[in-house]
Image (cartoon, rainbow, N blue to C red):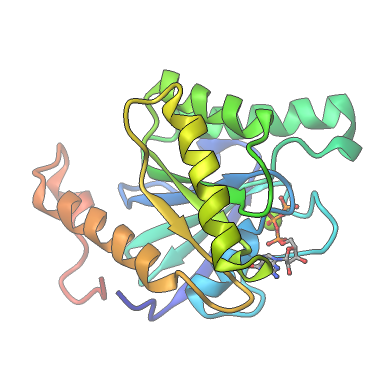
Length: 217
Ligand code: GTP
Ligand code: MG
């Protein structure tokens, strides 16, 4: 699938103020600095659609980007940023949790993991929580340009083994580099296949869920 157009729509702290309608949305979550906003820019072929920074803690809001006039990419704040302080971290955690639990349009959550590191408790706890809440998710290993292929394979094996201690099967796994533009096609194809399967499902409100005739999908 190709992204023909991408537009920033709105930023929110409250999921209830996010865009109305039945368009499916795909959100990116993970620790601060893991590369969520950069990945959105890579996928949409835009340099600074989503704001990025070398300093962790850049994204503090729920940001909606309308794609091809038919679905959303959502940039979320990162979790676990130490320098935000306990109160700040709690606030961000609340924004994220409320969005994930309350937003019916959330179709798949992509959990981003920096491929260079050993499994971190904060990510594993978050993934366990998603399982308990029954939230559909996939994992994206980011920044793969920073390590060798061999090292990547080793780290992914360690991660997979860790997950299989508690999960019966692994979620879909993706590998990306925003710097080298790797993994774009696989991710967009995955999103496209979900969008197609949603289109084939009859919905409660046929009128709102179907794209307009001349919309690009
Ligand atoms: P918060 O908004 O603070 O939660 O961070 P984020 O997850 O949105 O990270 P962001 O996209 O702002 O990227 C953080 C830093 O990592 C920036 O300096 C990016 O240039 C860098 N970065 C992101 N993705 C990649 C990648 O694939 N490869 C390399 N080498 N650097 C990357
Ligand atoms: Mg960000």
